[in-house]
Length: 358
Image (tube, rainbow, N blue to C red; front, side, top):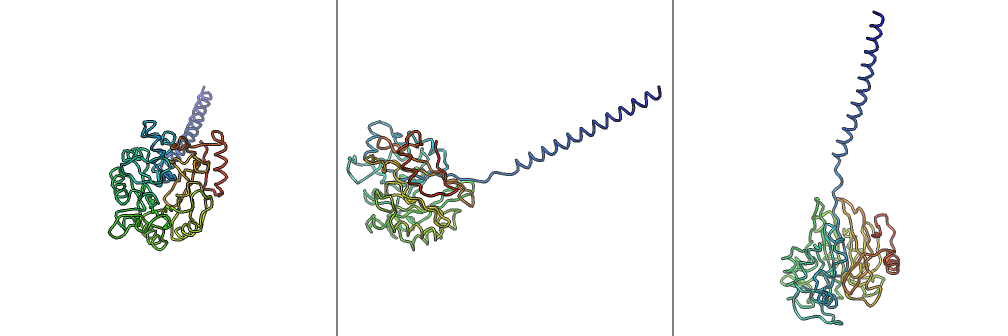
């Protein structure tokens, strides 16, 4: 009997020891998992800001006709609105002054934008426009000044133009998650009259003067993590950039710009990685009525992701304009000919450049 009791006691001690040993392993495992959970939840993902960059936006002439014909102020953006709204901001070149007036007929080269379209631009996430171009003064200083006022009322920033020289050359800042992007914009001197340039006492645009641009970039670098320069230059409908484009783009990158975004040729031009900067010589049209060639209705949109200290990725979206007004993202299946044309023009291989097929 005593022997049986001893055996039973030894059995209980063994079971208890096994239980506590096993329980400790479980406890240790749970503790490790908990520590892992605390570690991973305490590591914050990097702060980011995303921006969409597109080409020339011209809401006049044939585009205005399509808006009126379809009785829909949103008509140009029906296929692209969701894409624009997914970014933190949208940047474009506004290729016309905002001022009410006469209807612009087909074939005319003087443009204007109805004032009631500006809230539509705001709703579609257009946050900052370059006004440094050859059409922004189509309705004189009155048209330009009205544009500045209407954009300000709708909380849309503008760059490359202003009420005086200082404002036209002032960097404009887009900020999110403590990441700041500074924007500057310049028009080629060959594309406008000297009287269009902003001066000490009068409104106008900023022009491509590398000495002035260097000063502006130096100021911008003190204000922001990145400097982005918009350049309105080049020969219309020509694929190769001019030496003027190349020289200015290289010079502003040398001065500290991280990105150069080109407009004016109305077609896609090459992409260049120059030192630490990316140069897009021309994104092509975005909202435009030039349906008379494949080249003028093909373009690219960029979605660029920034961290606090570098460009994380540049996503390239092939675009085709439909119905004299509507940009639409395409892929190899939906529009094989246009897609092939666009891809052939993107001649730069870089690990940060990604062609996106929706």
